[in-house]
Image 1 (spheres, helix red, strand yellow):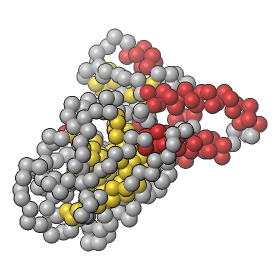
Image 2 (cartoon, one colour; image 1 turned 90 degrees about the horizontal axis):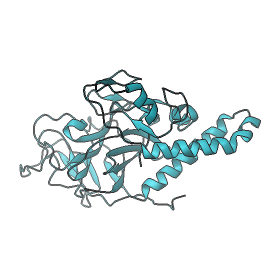
Image 3 (cartoon, helix red, strand yellow; image 1 turned 135 degrees about the horizontal axis):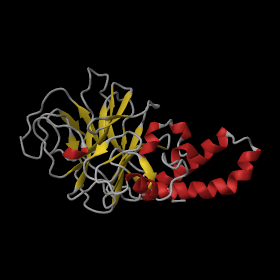
Image 4 (cartoon, one colour; image 1 turned 90 degrees about the vertical axis):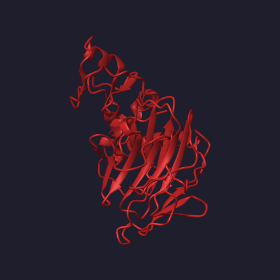
Length: 309
Protein backbone atom coordinates (compact mmCIF):
# COMPACT_ATOMS: atom_id res chain seq x y z
CA UNK A 1 0.00 0.00 0.00
CA UNK A 2 2.06 2.90 -1.26
CA UNK A 3 1.54 6.47 -2.32
CA UNK A 4 3.19 8.08 -5.38
CA UNK A 5 6.43 10.01 -4.87
CA UNK A 6 5.35 12.49 -7.53
CA UNK A 7 2.67 13.80 -5.19
CA UNK A 8 5.32 15.62 -3.17
CA UNK A 9 6.10 17.98 -6.03
CA UNK A 10 2.62 19.54 -6.02
CA UNK A 11 0.57 21.68 -3.67
CA UNK A 12 -1.54 19.56 -1.35
CA UNK A 13 -4.63 21.49 -2.49
CA UNK A 14 -4.42 19.69 -5.85
CA UNK A 15 -3.52 16.30 -4.39
CA UNK A 16 -4.68 13.36 -6.51
CA UNK A 17 -6.14 15.57 -9.26
CA UNK A 18 -5.70 14.17 -12.75
CA UNK A 19 -2.39 15.88 -13.60
CA UNK A 20 -0.79 14.05 -10.66
CA UNK A 21 -1.89 10.70 -12.07
CA UNK A 22 -0.54 11.17 -15.59
CA UNK A 23 2.40 9.12 -16.89
CA UNK A 24 5.09 11.57 -18.14
CA UNK A 25 5.64 9.36 -21.21
CA UNK A 26 2.16 8.63 -22.56
CA UNK A 27 0.46 11.58 -20.75
CA UNK A 28 -2.47 9.36 -19.79
CA UNK A 29 -3.61 8.16 -16.36
CA UNK A 30 -1.24 5.48 -15.02
CA UNK A 31 -1.67 1.84 -15.96
CA UNK A 32 0.31 -0.56 -13.74
CA UNK A 33 2.54 2.28 -12.45
CA UNK A 34 6.14 1.65 -11.36
CA UNK A 35 8.50 3.96 -9.46
CA UNK A 36 12.16 4.56 -10.32
CA UNK A 37 14.82 4.83 -7.57
CA UNK A 38 14.82 8.62 -8.10
CA UNK A 39 11.14 8.72 -7.18
CA UNK A 40 9.36 9.27 -10.51
CA UNK A 41 6.38 7.23 -11.68
CA UNK A 42 5.58 5.78 -15.10
CA UNK A 43 3.31 3.18 -16.69
CA UNK A 44 5.16 -0.12 -16.55
CA UNK A 45 4.80 -0.69 -20.29
CA UNK A 46 5.84 2.89 -21.14
CA UNK A 47 9.05 2.72 -19.14
CA UNK A 48 9.87 -0.78 -20.32
CA UNK A 49 9.48 0.32 -23.93
CA UNK A 50 11.49 3.50 -23.29
CA UNK A 51 14.41 1.57 -21.83
CA UNK A 52 14.24 -1.24 -24.37
CA UNK A 53 16.96 -3.85 -23.81
CA UNK A 54 19.55 -1.41 -22.44
CA UNK A 55 21.18 -2.22 -19.10
CA UNK A 56 22.31 1.39 -18.64
CA UNK A 57 19.11 3.35 -18.15
CA UNK A 58 18.16 6.87 -17.14
CA UNK A 59 15.01 8.46 -15.76
CA UNK A 60 12.99 10.11 -18.56
CA UNK A 61 12.10 12.99 -16.20
CA UNK A 62 15.22 13.95 -14.21
CA UNK A 63 17.75 12.11 -16.41
CA UNK A 64 19.37 10.36 -13.43
CA UNK A 65 21.45 7.49 -14.77
CA UNK A 66 21.36 3.97 -13.36
CA UNK A 67 24.44 1.87 -14.04
CA UNK A 68 22.38 -1.23 -13.32
CA UNK A 69 18.85 -1.55 -14.65
CA UNK A 70 16.52 -1.07 -11.65
CA UNK A 71 14.20 -3.88 -10.68
CA UNK A 72 10.75 -2.33 -10.97
CA UNK A 73 7.73 -3.28 -8.90
CA UNK A 74 4.14 -2.25 -9.46
CA UNK A 75 3.20 0.61 -7.10
CA UNK A 76 0.01 -1.06 -5.92
CA UNK A 77 -1.58 1.85 -4.12
CA UNK A 78 -0.88 4.28 -6.95
CA UNK A 79 -2.46 1.72 -9.28
CA UNK A 80 -5.52 1.51 -7.03
CA UNK A 81 -5.79 5.29 -6.89
CA UNK A 82 -5.40 5.62 -10.67
CA UNK A 83 -7.98 2.90 -11.32
CA UNK A 84 -10.36 4.50 -8.83
CA UNK A 85 -9.83 7.86 -10.50
CA UNK A 86 -10.60 6.41 -13.95
CA UNK A 87 -13.86 4.96 -12.65
CA UNK A 88 -14.72 8.15 -10.78
CA UNK A 89 -13.85 10.28 -13.79
CA UNK A 90 -16.17 8.21 -15.94
CA UNK A 91 -19.12 8.27 -13.53
CA UNK A 92 -18.73 11.97 -12.74
CA UNK A 93 -17.90 13.15 -16.26
CA UNK A 94 -21.29 14.59 -17.11
CA UNK A 95 -21.68 16.18 -13.71
CA UNK A 96 -18.25 17.80 -13.84
CA UNK A 97 -18.83 19.13 -17.35
CA UNK A 98 -22.15 20.62 -16.29
CA UNK A 99 -20.40 22.32 -13.37
CA UNK A 100 -17.55 23.91 -15.43
CA UNK A 101 -15.01 21.32 -14.21
CA UNK A 102 -15.25 22.99 -10.84
CA UNK A 103 -12.10 23.21 -8.72
CA UNK A 104 -14.19 22.81 -5.58
CA UNK A 105 -15.53 19.44 -6.73
CA UNK A 106 -12.05 18.19 -7.62
CA UNK A 107 -10.72 19.32 -4.24
CA UNK A 108 -13.57 17.49 -2.50
CA UNK A 109 -12.76 14.33 -4.46
CA UNK A 110 -9.06 14.67 -3.63
CA UNK A 111 -9.80 15.04 0.08
CA UNK A 112 -12.15 12.07 0.06
CA UNK A 113 -9.61 9.82 -1.64
CA UNK A 114 -6.84 10.77 0.79
CA UNK A 115 -9.17 10.42 3.77
CA UNK A 116 -9.96 6.91 2.60
CA UNK A 117 -6.25 6.15 2.15
CA UNK A 118 -5.39 7.36 5.65
CA UNK A 119 -8.22 5.37 7.20
CA UNK A 120 -6.88 2.22 5.54
CA UNK A 121 -3.35 2.90 6.70
CA UNK A 122 -4.38 3.73 10.28
CA UNK A 123 -5.71 0.19 10.63
CA UNK A 124 -2.03 -0.82 10.98
CA UNK A 125 -1.34 1.48 13.93
CA UNK A 126 1.01 0.06 16.56
CA UNK A 127 1.82 1.12 20.11
CA UNK A 128 5.23 2.82 20.06
CA UNK A 129 7.34 3.75 23.08
CA UNK A 130 10.83 5.21 23.00
CA UNK A 131 13.85 3.19 24.13
CA UNK A 132 15.92 5.05 26.78
CA UNK A 133 18.87 2.70 26.15
CA UNK A 134 19.24 4.20 22.65
CA UNK A 135 18.69 7.87 23.57
CA UNK A 136 21.56 10.35 23.32
CA UNK A 137 22.55 11.55 26.83
CA UNK A 138 21.15 15.05 26.17
CA UNK A 139 17.68 13.72 25.44
CA UNK A 140 15.01 13.67 28.13
CA UNK A 141 12.30 11.03 27.81
CA UNK A 142 8.98 11.10 29.62
CA UNK A 143 8.24 8.33 32.13
CA UNK A 144 5.81 6.67 29.74
CA UNK A 145 8.29 6.78 26.86
CA UNK A 146 5.93 8.80 24.66
CA UNK A 147 7.71 12.17 24.65
CA UNK A 148 11.27 13.35 23.99
CA UNK A 149 12.93 16.76 24.38
CA UNK A 150 16.46 18.10 24.09
CA UNK A 151 17.78 19.09 27.50
CA UNK A 152 21.12 20.82 26.70
CA UNK A 153 22.98 19.19 29.59
CA UNK A 154 24.49 15.77 28.98
CA UNK A 155 23.32 13.22 31.52
CA UNK A 156 25.67 10.67 33.04
CA UNK A 157 24.42 7.55 31.30
CA UNK A 158 26.15 4.26 30.42
CA UNK A 159 28.00 4.45 27.10
CA UNK A 160 26.60 1.29 25.57
CA UNK A 161 26.67 0.12 21.92
CA UNK A 162 22.92 0.74 21.70
CA UNK A 163 23.20 4.46 22.54
CA UNK A 164 23.67 7.27 20.03
CA UNK A 165 26.76 9.14 21.24
CA UNK A 166 27.09 12.05 18.81
CA UNK A 167 23.67 12.96 17.41
CA UNK A 168 20.58 13.53 19.53
CA UNK A 169 18.62 10.56 18.21
CA UNK A 170 16.40 7.95 19.82
CA UNK A 171 14.74 4.75 18.59
CA UNK A 172 11.52 3.04 19.52
CA UNK A 173 11.51 -0.11 21.63
CA UNK A 174 9.34 -2.05 19.21
CA UNK A 175 10.85 -3.56 16.07
CA UNK A 176 9.04 -5.02 13.06
CA UNK A 177 10.36 -7.58 10.58
CA UNK A 178 7.27 -8.24 8.46
CA UNK A 179 3.87 -6.91 7.51
CA UNK A 180 2.74 -3.32 7.85
CA UNK A 181 2.90 -0.83 10.69
CA UNK A 182 1.96 2.81 11.26
CA UNK A 183 2.58 5.40 13.95
CA UNK A 184 2.01 9.14 14.43
CA UNK A 185 4.22 11.84 15.94
CA UNK A 186 3.07 15.27 17.10
CA UNK A 187 5.58 17.87 15.90
CA UNK A 188 3.50 20.96 16.73
CA UNK A 189 5.44 24.04 17.83
CA UNK A 190 8.83 22.85 16.58
CA UNK A 191 11.19 24.45 14.07
CA UNK A 192 13.42 21.39 13.60
CA UNK A 193 12.75 17.64 13.83
CA UNK A 194 13.61 14.26 12.30
CA UNK A 195 11.06 11.43 11.98
CA UNK A 196 11.23 8.04 10.29
CA UNK A 197 12.38 4.45 10.65
CA UNK A 198 15.79 2.78 10.85
CA UNK A 199 17.30 -0.69 10.59
CA UNK A 200 18.11 -2.50 13.84
CA UNK A 201 21.90 -2.73 13.41
CA UNK A 202 22.62 0.83 12.25
CA UNK A 203 25.75 2.77 13.05
CA UNK A 204 25.11 4.78 16.25
CA UNK A 205 28.54 6.28 16.83
CA UNK A 206 30.47 9.06 15.15
CA UNK A 207 29.31 10.90 12.06
CA UNK A 208 26.00 9.71 10.59
CA UNK A 209 24.40 10.70 7.30
CA UNK A 210 20.65 10.16 7.21
CA UNK A 211 19.98 8.32 3.96
CA UNK A 212 18.57 4.94 2.85
CA UNK A 213 22.05 3.65 1.96
CA UNK A 214 22.83 3.90 5.68
CA UNK A 215 19.47 2.34 6.59
CA UNK A 216 17.82 5.61 7.68
CA UNK A 217 14.49 6.47 6.03
CA UNK A 218 13.60 9.92 7.33
CA UNK A 219 11.84 13.21 6.63
CA UNK A 220 13.01 16.34 8.45
CA UNK A 221 12.05 19.97 9.09
CA UNK A 222 14.78 22.64 9.18
CA UNK A 223 14.50 26.27 10.31
CA UNK A 224 10.73 26.07 10.45
CA UNK A 225 10.32 26.22 6.66
CA UNK A 226 12.38 23.54 4.89
CA UNK A 227 10.89 20.06 4.63
CA UNK A 228 13.35 17.53 3.23
CA UNK A 229 13.42 13.83 2.45
CA UNK A 230 16.83 12.55 3.46
CA UNK A 231 18.52 10.93 0.48
CA UNK A 232 21.84 11.52 -1.26
CA UNK A 233 21.38 14.32 -2.19
CA UNK A 234 18.45 15.39 -0.02
CA UNK A 235 15.13 16.14 -1.72
CA UNK A 236 13.61 19.53 -0.93
CA UNK A 237 9.87 19.12 -0.50
CA UNK A 238 7.48 21.90 -1.55
CA UNK A 239 6.64 24.60 0.96
CA UNK A 240 3.52 23.64 2.86
CA UNK A 241 1.49 24.70 5.86
CA UNK A 242 3.17 23.77 9.12
CA UNK A 243 2.79 20.06 9.74
CA UNK A 244 1.43 19.30 13.20
CA UNK A 245 1.22 15.50 13.17
CA UNK A 246 3.35 13.23 10.98
CA UNK A 247 2.07 9.76 10.10
CA UNK A 248 4.68 7.12 9.24
CA UNK A 249 3.58 3.98 7.38
CA UNK A 250 5.78 0.99 6.50
CA UNK A 251 4.99 -1.96 4.26
CA UNK A 252 7.91 -4.31 4.94
CA UNK A 253 7.41 -6.73 2.07
CA UNK A 254 6.69 -4.00 -0.46
CA UNK A 255 9.78 -2.01 0.58
CA UNK A 256 7.77 1.14 1.29
CA UNK A 257 8.12 3.95 3.84
CA UNK A 258 5.51 6.71 3.47
CA UNK A 259 4.98 9.95 5.37
CA UNK A 260 1.70 11.85 5.76
CA UNK A 261 0.48 15.18 7.10
CA UNK A 262 -2.34 13.81 9.23
CA UNK A 263 -4.17 17.09 9.89
CA UNK A 264 -4.40 18.17 6.25
CA UNK A 265 -4.82 14.56 5.06
CA UNK A 266 -2.00 14.91 2.53
CA UNK A 267 0.98 12.86 1.42
CA UNK A 268 4.46 14.19 2.21
CA UNK A 269 6.90 11.69 0.68
CA UNK A 270 7.45 7.98 0.02
CA UNK A 271 10.60 5.87 -0.17
CA UNK A 272 9.73 3.04 -2.58
CA UNK A 273 11.49 -0.02 -3.91
CA UNK A 274 13.53 -0.54 -0.74
CA UNK A 275 14.82 -3.92 0.47
CA UNK A 276 14.48 -4.72 4.16
CA UNK A 277 16.30 -7.67 5.71
CA UNK A 278 16.33 -6.78 9.43
CA UNK A 279 13.90 -5.38 11.98
CA UNK A 280 12.84 -1.78 11.46
CA UNK A 281 12.35 0.61 14.37
CA UNK A 282 10.66 4.00 14.75
CA UNK A 283 13.23 6.81 14.84
CA UNK A 284 12.98 10.36 16.21
CA UNK A 285 15.08 13.43 16.88
CA UNK A 286 13.68 16.60 18.49
CA UNK A 287 16.89 18.37 17.36
CA UNK A 288 18.58 21.01 19.55
CA UNK A 289 16.23 23.23 21.50
CA UNK A 290 17.68 26.41 19.97
CA UNK A 291 17.66 28.38 23.23
CA UNK A 292 14.00 27.66 23.68
CA UNK A 293 12.87 28.24 20.08
CA UNK A 294 12.65 24.51 19.46
CA UNK A 295 11.99 23.30 22.97
CA UNK A 296 8.61 21.67 22.30
CA UNK A 297 8.67 17.88 22.67
CA UNK A 298 8.12 15.27 20.02
CA UNK A 299 5.13 13.22 21.16
CA UNK A 300 4.09 9.74 20.08
CA UNK A 301 0.40 10.39 19.48
CA UNK A 302 -2.43 7.90 19.92
CA UNK A 303 -3.94 6.93 16.57
CA UNK A 304 -7.69 7.31 16.50
CA UNK A 305 -8.70 4.45 14.24
CA UNK A 306 -11.89 4.75 12.25
CA UNK A 307 -13.65 2.12 10.20
CA UNK A 308 -12.16 1.76 6.73
CA UNK A 309 -14.48 3.00 3.99
